[in-house]
Every structure is written in C-alpha cells, then in structure tokens.
Image (cartoon, rainbow, N blue to C red; front, top):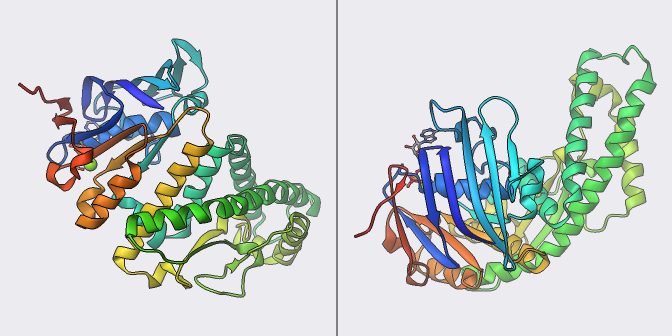
Length: 383
Ligand SMILES: Nc1ncnc2c1ncn2[C@@H]1O[C@H](COP(=O)(O)OP(=O)(O)OP(=O)(O)O)[C@@H](O)[C@H]1O
Ligand SMILES: [Mg+2]
C-alpha cells in the first residue's frame, strides 16, 4: 500500500492539512509537540480503526471541534482508492471508499500500516495484554475473519462475567444451565483463538529469529511459545501460565470445559472468568531464558524491533494489497548507531516508509532523502 496524499481536517492539532507523499522513505522532522506523531497516527488509524496511543477516538478530534476527517489517496498495486473517515466526537464514525458510504470496518482492506514506536518495548517488558494485542492485531490482518471471532469472544466474556458477578457467589437464578450456555460459547470461541494464536506463533518464530539477527547483528536462539492459562498453575516462568508446544484441538476443548467446571466455585465467588485466551500470553525466550526479566535493555529493544519487523514481513508476504506502510515514530533516537543502520537496511525495500524524528541527524541518511518539516500542525513552507 502506498499513501499518495493525506488530508486532515480538525484531526488533533491539524486544522487543515493537505500533503502529497511519495514512494520510498519520507522523514517528518520538527520540534517536540508539533504534530509529527499526530500525522502518522492518522495514517495508522485507517488501517487499524483506532489510534496506537489512545483507546478511544475522543482525543483525535481537535479541541473545540465536533468531528475530524482523515482523507487518504491510497494506491494498492497501482489501483487508486480514496479512503475517508469522519471521526465524530459524539455518535458513530462514518467512512467512505471512493465516495461511497461503507461500514468503517472495510477501510483496513485498503490500508495496511505497521507502526514502530518507543512504546513497543512493552512487547518485551510489559504486561501480557500488550503481547495479546500484538498477536491479535497480526492475526486479524492475516485472517480478517478473526476480527469477528475476537469481538464475539469479548462480548461473551463480558456477559459471562456480569452473570458471574451478579450471582454473588451462588448458582444464578436460572440454574446451572444459564451459565452452561455461556460456558459453551466461551469454549467454542476461545479454543479457536488459542489455536489460531498458536499457529501464528509457529509462523512468526523463524521470521522473528531472522529479524533479530538483522537488527542485532548477531544470531541468537529465539523461541516463542503460547503461554496458556488453561494449562496453568504449574509455572515455568511468570504468573501461572504453562508453555505449550503442540496443541491438539480436541484435547484443548476438553481441557477448557474441565477447567471451567473445576473453577465454578472460584469464578462465582470472584465474579470473573479465570481461564481463557484473555488471560494468556506469548512467551519470548532469548537463548533459553525468558526475555521478560532476563534480557538487557538493548536485547529487549532488539527483540521488540524484531517482533514488529517480523510482523511487517509476514504481512508483506501474505498481502493482496502490497506492502504495509511502515511508520517509524521516534524510533531512531532510542537506538545506538549500529542498530540504526541495521534497522534502516532491514526496512529499505518496503514500498513506503514514514519516519518521524525531532532531530534529523538521528535518522540514517538512506531514510532522509526527502524531508517534510512539521511545525504547529502544518507543513512548514520550504523556500
Ligand atoms: N485533540 C487535540 N486537539 C488539539 N491539539 C491536540 C489534540 N491532541 C493533541 N494535540 C496537540 O498536539 C501536539 C502533539 O503532537 P504530536 O504528538 O504529534 O507531537 P510530536 O511532533 O510527535 O512531538 P514529539 O517530538 O514530542 O513526539 C501537542 O501540542 C498536543 O497538545
Ligand atoms: Mg511524537
């Protein structure tokens, strides 16, 4: 995918922006707080229907305004598409493809963006939730039907939890069978998610290993495992998750049911669902040791970059709409000279790369040929 032109209206600190973009790398430069991240965030939004830094859309609408508009001319394998979304402060958003009103969830079919940011370090050092999000975003990108499965699971989980909570420690009014209906749905959807993530992890493993040696400059053994709450309580690392190498779908569903029955009393008492993919993790091991808690700062950075790079490469191989747009937001300032160079080399063959930096000299020259200066929510005129 290539964004040839981006237009913003009342998006964050942009009142009106109209910017042409070209293939290859573009460097957005400006002082802190000028709108560099805001600009790339708008492009990320089209591919993910959400921001990478806030969980609701409210903050995206310029202060004092009612709605924001993102308009992008995209080119996918030379087919031009006009993508538009209106983000409303109140009420639901509206989207158009080639001027035709469509459900917003269709936009990501034409927009694929992988964003690298300093916050990616949480993929290695942070809580399991960030790794689950990473897996699920990639899963949906590679297998779009999982978008529906994941949101159905979330809905079932929420409804089951509120039933557990309202029962105040006892079997609910409608009897055991009311709960069993939700158990059934939880197991059915949850098992699909667990299996799909496990398959994804297998697929990801060699890509991450290769990407790690690209960015770190040396080869190390990297192992990725699903860490499952379902088989929990015999701890290998963190928390009470168990790393599982081979999953048999039938054993999985059976085990899920067993654990639910086993946990009935505890779940009723606590009002939450204790096992399932919402409690799982991705275990990352570097040279046989869990990276979380063992890896150095530099190693953690290389791992985080490798995970992102690997996901970009998988999307690139798999995609029907060409390469994802790569966005590197403030990443280079965090890296030493040799990692900067290696990362630049590893990404140079992506069709479009947008880099932001407060200081242009932090960015390797091969990514700095085209510079767009940003100040106060505008492109600064160059004369
Ligand atoms: N909804 C909004 N309405 C108006 N201004 C906003 C809104 N959201 C954010 N801003 C402003 O946008 C600016 C931040 O822009 P952005 O995060 O893009 O900065 P940046 O250029 O990436 O800076 P840095 O180099 O520090 O990362 C801040 O001044 C912030 O107050
Ligand atoms: Mg920024």
